[in-house]
Amino acid sequence: DPIAPPDLSTCKPAEITPGGSETVPCCPPVTTKIKTFKPDLSIPLRTRPAAHQVTDEYLAKFKKAQAAMRALPDDDPRSMVQQAKVHCAYCNGAYPQVGFTDNDIQVHYSWLFFPFHRMYLYFYERILGKLIDDPTFALPYWNWDSPVGFPIPDIYTDTSSPLYDQYRNADHQPPVLVDLSYGGTDDDVDEQTRIDENLAIMYRQMVSGAKTPDLFFGHAYRAGDLNTQKYPGTIENMPHNDIHIWVGDPTQTHHEDMGNFYSAGRDPLFYAHHCNVDRMWNIWKTLGGKRKDITDTDWLDAEFLFYDENAELVNCKVRDSLEPEKQLRYNYEPAPLPWLFTKP
Ligand code: C2O
Image (cartoon, rainbow, N blue to C red; front, side, top):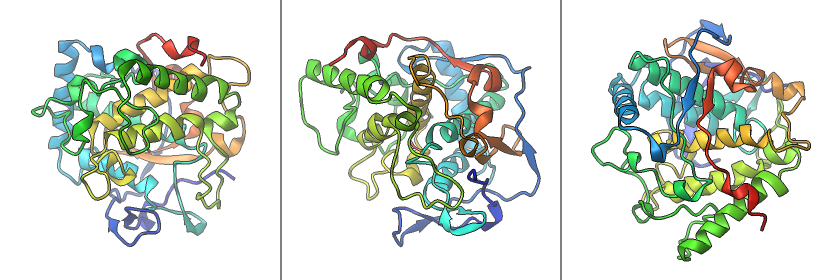
């Protein structure tokens, strides 16, 4: 059976490290009124831009929206604090599975990874748009699959901006190029080597190593499963995880913010990182062969709950997220795919 949506009333303190004793409160406000997600075709199509080349006009809007989100009271489910807690709750064991209460919901390391984060970004983006009364607002993506996008996008590093977060690795600020296979230590290779290595990783994770849905999305995760299998898909495993660790602050106990699930959503850069992960899903489906969405109903009918831009709780299924232009009304500004032609 598919993973069922959480029962918010059973939410418990989250574990900062799995099985560890240190916990953190991540539960959302509880409501019993739950709407069912329906695509709203009256929403204008939103195009997500590459973060390293946004216009001044766009940046002004984005900062205004992010500042407004930060200014909401902490108990508003749309606030920055609560939005970060969404990730914490679904990732750090706050929700027992309904009917299998010994096992918690975990949206990483499995086929739930791509659709969960897609819906999470969708609501985050819609909330930002609502806060500036602009339904065309679209999140930017961090174009880390292309050399021009390897550094952390500048818009996130201005310390006076609402897009800034203080808990990041001080040694990885622009113009340092991201290391897509960062293992926790800097290996100080020259720029051309870094570029070649990063592009080879992208080729492997998208093309040669991701020929089937099982490899790309990660293994099945069904109701009652204990998700300690750690069978993530190619992109989730690398570069997604590596980028989290590369951005997080190694001087913080738990590698906050980006380096731990419980705190990652506190950094606005998280959402740009995940937009590019999400973009990879779209691109992968265009690469041919068996590269298609999973057809198993235990995937299609898995459900999540999110608060929407009106602070109403919405139930979404994986099947609601497969065609972003049609169902969620967004797409991505195209960018070159240099890794596609750099077969190692
Ligand atoms: Cu839910 Cu990038 O992790």
